[in-house]
Amino acid sequence: MLSKKTKYGLKALTYLASQEKRKPVQIAEIAKHENISQKFLESILLTLRKTGILGSKKGKGGGYYLIKDPSEIPMTTVIRVLEGPIAMVPCVSLNFYEQCDDCPDENECSVHKLMLMVRDSALDVYRNNTLADILT
Amino acid sequence: MLSKKTKYGLKALTYLASQEKRKPVQIAEIAKHENISQKFLESILLTLRKTGILGSKKGKGGGYYLIKDPSEIPMTTVIRVLEGPIAMVPCVSLNFYEQCDDCPDENECSVHKLMLMVRDSALDVYRNNTLADILT
DNA sequence: GAATTATCCTATTAATTCTATGGGATAAAC
DNA sequence: GTTTATCCCATAGAATTAATAGGATAATTC
Image (cartoon, rainbow over all chains, first blue to last red; front, side, top):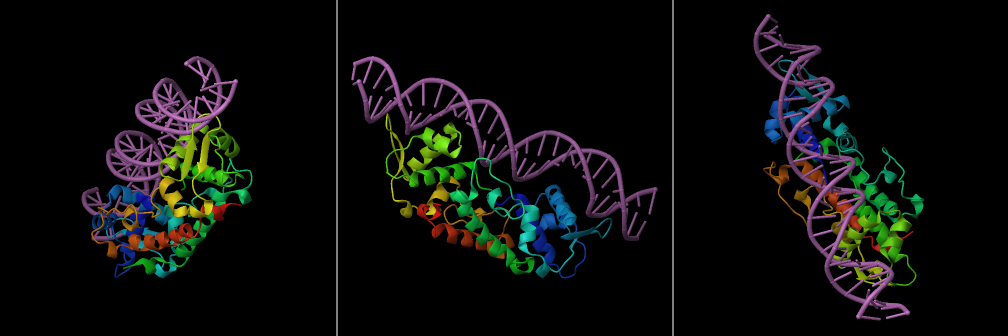
């Protein structure tokens, strides 16, 4: 299940990408437009900024804005920042790899085998779609 | 993230599928072989039986066994029974559809658009793999 | 038919993760 | 220096997941 964090983050990014001008948009405006708790959204935008996806400006006329063009923001990046690993089990994760403690040999594990395929198929989608591609 | 329930369930099914004879295997044996808490596994096998994937036999010489041939058990079924929806958001789920309360129009939603693609790609994997296919 | 074996079933607890909120600090604009 | 809006940390509340407990039921064995 996709977390609300990711869902809201994606919606906020979409909203920012759909702006005519690339000027700062306030949290309150995004929250209102997308029906999101403002405080919750605040923390989400903060992590998006810290990861270099968004820029921000304080004070009057401040807010958040995209640093790059939407077509330069792959979904792989967004999902990994907001949701974490794309893989459903750590033992098939590219960026968050971890060994299973119950599994003596990955190559003999059916879960590993299946989840490798699932990861690859998801990765294929995320790699081939940027923020620009999912705008409606 | 894949739940332990699904992971353990898949491992148990794999173990049953790898048996020479199709005779009942006891929970204790599966649990030991796959390093799973026996009590937890018990509840998992119970749901697999109630869904018609496994059969069971009580008393001495009892246990669980596959009802169908592994090649007749698609991953779509197993995942839906153990993990629930394949889709990451209810609004793109085939079997567990639900409307988003925050979203006025699905067709205008970027999350919907993206997650539809992800669901399709996962579905493709699950539909094209049976229990027989993931045996190592 | 009594003892043994193993599943069946429900309820509950423990642990973890996710969602949301609160309150003040910091910085920019005017 | 007042206003505006992000920054930041901490924590509370909710929901889900993982695991355990204990006894009921049914089949086999002798």
